[in-house]
Every structure is written in structure tokens, then in C-alpha cells.
Image 1 (cartoon, rainbow, N blue to C red):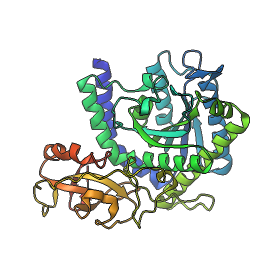
Image 2: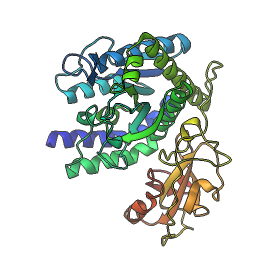
Image 3: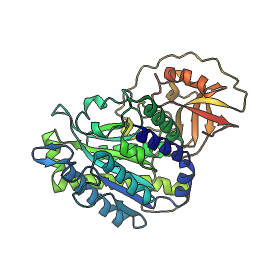
Image 4: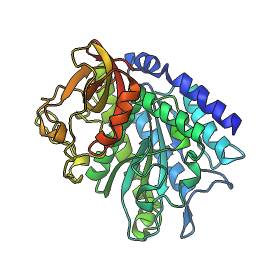
Length: 394
């Protein structure tokens, strides 16, 4: 346990430099994409249904995806965590760490881990994409879907010290790779839907492999092996080509958006749409048209939250609670802010989504934290930020 805590502490400290590294990467656009075929070898086959092993599906789609990227984005280097059926470590922790190490040593601009899902119900189907973070149920699984597929790959939050440091890492993640990871996840889900797959949206999970990668990262679940129709499709050449095509188109759209921001011109890549940070809520302001991935999200009746006592809104420095972010300005009275309409302030900050919409003004981080759980009733992805002179700084 002491070793684990020390490792996590080092990762948290190193992540502080993430925004600097990300800025350096973005100056040249997207140049290196790391593709991770989940599981592998005799020890870690992943889910197994109908004689089909998840590791095999993951690898075939990963190799097809890489081939498409190399052909259609010749300026992008593809790095694989594995190209054959092998485990990367003797234990699962070693295996997951090895995957992240490959990505980090390659200087990846993006990491995509490919998996197939499983559920108790054989009728469940569809694709979903996971980014690093605590879900609404924290370490519980998405609608009990990941009950036997990824449970061993989740970070154990039962230890208080580990939990505290992981949450500190997640807080810092929002300022470095979080927005980019979510952008790519949303784009991927949009392309799944365009490709005729059931869109199960973007979720947060405390996955070890995402935690250890020092770059924007996602883990995508192609479909459900427990669903006979989806299993047959994922196990077929046609299905694997189809998934590779979907993911390649998503990568091209993401790369196009990043390259455009960094001044790299490419006529082959279509820019991504504007995206809000809050994955759990529906976005429908006039300035931010909803993406396809957001169309199936259900509006929830907003909780009316009283304005808390502020430290001093005229102060140039303090702490606030960020509700969402955008790559363009949004009217503070827009309906997207729900019960916080007219109560938010716009700051600028790092990342693709440079405009940060925040609530409250507090003298200390501790004071802001007291109100965070209340705000999360409406905006589940809200978090505390430090602002100085109109900018979010940390």
C-alpha cells in the first residue's frame, strides 16, 4: 500500500506539468496517436462469450484502425501497445502500467484503448466511451454494465490516502488533458451514432490505464459481447472494418480541430463541433448547437440553488466553481446554465475550451469546496478553480 500511495503521489506531482506539456504538443498539432488493444495473452483474455475472446476483437480492430490512420493521415505516427496476442506484464497492474509507459515514452498526443463490453442482460447493446474521473456512483459500475469486464482495472478508492490523491489528480486533470479527452470521447460517440451503432454516451470511470497516461486518453467499448447480434458483428471482418472506419473518422475530426487551433492546415480533416464540458447534461444554447451525441440526453428538472454568500466578487483573485467550458462565448443568461442563469461569470483559461463559466466567488479553496456538492446536483462535472485577473490559473 505504501508503494502504491507513493506512486500515485508522484503521478499527481508530475501531472502539474501537464498543461505545459500539452501546450508544447499542440504547437505541432496531432503527430502521434497511441492505439491500445485491450487485454492480451493467455492471462488476460478479457471477456469471453460464445468461444470468442475480447482480446482478439480488440487487436483486430486496433490494427485496422492504425492502418487507416497511416493511410489517411500520413503525417501522423501510429504507435501500438501490442500488435500480437501477448500480455505486457505478469500481473494486471504491471500489464496496465506497461501500456501507459509505451504511450508516454512515445510522446503520444492521444491515447485510445479499444475494448468490448459485457452486461448481465443479453439485450443491452451499443457503444460507449470512458474518460478518467469519478462517475456519479463513484466506483460503482455504469448501470451495472461493467460488472465483470473492467472491475479489476478500476482504482481501489477504499484507502483514504489513495482516494484523496486520486481526487487531487482528477482536479488537476481538468486543467490539462480533461477537456481534450472529453472532446474526443464525444466525437467518437457522435461517429458511432452516425455509423448506426447505439449511442451509450460518454462516462467517467476511475480506470488505471487512463490514470497513468500523460496525454488526453479515452477507453472505448465497441459493443456488448453478451449480445449475440453485436458479438457476431464485432467478430466479423465486416464489423471490424466498420468499427475501424468509425474510429478513424473520429480521430480525423479530433485531429482536424486540434490542428486548426495550432495553426496546422489540413484539407483532409474536418474540424470538430463546439463541445461543453459537462458530459451528464444536455447542451442546447444558440451559440453551442447540440452535437449528435447529445440528442439522446434527457433534460433533468434543474434544482433551484440559492446564491451562496460570496467572498468578494470585485476581487481580482479567488476561487469559484466551474460549471462548463466552451470554445466560444455563451450568454450568461442562456438556458444551458439552468438554475444558475445570470449567476455565472466567464473567465479565460488554457485548453481548447478556453472560456470557463464559473459560479460563486470564495476567498479560499476550502470555502468553495463546501458548496461544490450542492452545485453538482445540477452540474455533475463541476469542480473548484482558482482565478486571478479574469483567468482560471489552477
